[in-house]
Amino acid sequence: MSSSLWVEQFSERLQHIHQTLPSTVKLIAVSKQVSAAAIRTAYELGIRDFGESRIQEAAEKQIELADLPDLTWHLIGHLQTNKAAKALELFDWIHSVDSLKLAQRLDQLATQRLQPPKICLQVKIRTDPNKYGWTVSELLEHLPDLDRCSHLDIAGLMAIPPYGLPETETRAVFEQTRQLAEQIQQQPWNHIRLRELSMGMSDDYPLAVQAGATMIRLGRTLFGSRETT
Ligand SMILES: *Cc1c(COP(=O)(O)O)cnc(C)c1O
Image 1 (cartoon, rainbow, N blue to C red):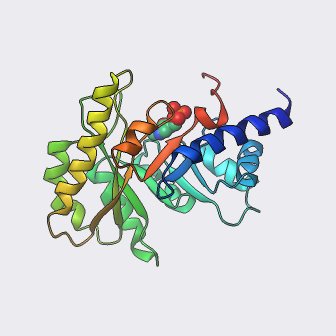
Image 2 (image 1 turned 45 degrees about the vertical axis):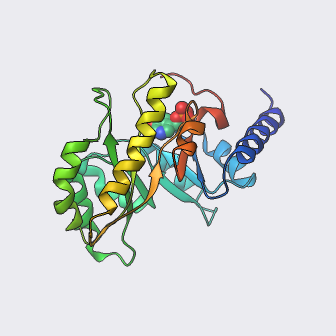
């Protein structure tokens, strides 16, 4: 495809999404497997928030894009504890904090920072062997320990419904994620201040937005389908 056609299509898709999206919802362009050049084009069309799944891939692109001053990088993929320091260097947001051990490691690493790193807790509302994340009961049990992570800004919940659920079920997962956040915030925590709901991808984001998503993570519907690897 010629690059001007690609830009035109991208721009049309972006306009369409913006028309249907409340202005309070942050659009994160998921740029995994997308080139730095395509990210630059997205930037020129106004996107500032980009989501990546892998540390190494993000690091390489960030070097190529170092001249763009005002990018916000979101880590959306599973993070191994031994890469936590690198993740804090590269990302403004970590959506995929999925264990107490990882949260505590990030907290420890963040003691020297002026701004606490912004994180979301990844929850599994439905059992899903293919996904990382806390089950509801595990999360509720770990909240007191999480609240002692005083160097983190525990800002939201992140959810990914299991692949292939019927629409009513997907909607229910998003609704239950919002209700869980509301339930958690009814208690007087010191460091848990859930105000973001990171949920909704290309196939389901309208449902997520209706259920109260504040950040949606869109890949294919913006950049076109990824090469399968
Ligand atoms: C890949 C990915 C997305 C984007 O998925 P699309 O279906 O391409 O929109 C969003 N969130 C996470 C966690 C992902 O891994």
